[in-house]
Image: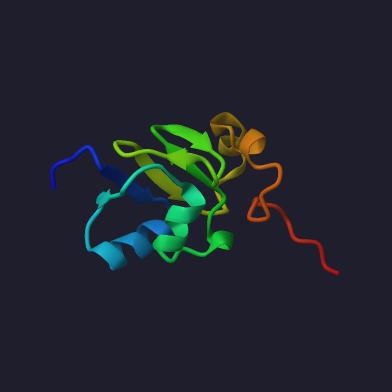
Length: 109
């Protein structure tokens, strides 16, 4: 599909890749949006659970899940579980302070 001025290029990593492939049958997904939308709103439209997203990539940069996505952007959802050193190098720590889906060991209560 060609990229129109209302289209985003969408991908997923790890299990979200399989989820999007099953839902759309191809990767990447070219999805038409009406205008700016937050990553959280987009995930709801795609029926991706909030706990299944740690961060999003927008145009190659790590962003918080509520970051605003615009037509023409390249977007990828990343679930919790990315290995250790990459988390700091890619900027997860700085974008993830208030995120309940932040990859961390759960304490037994």
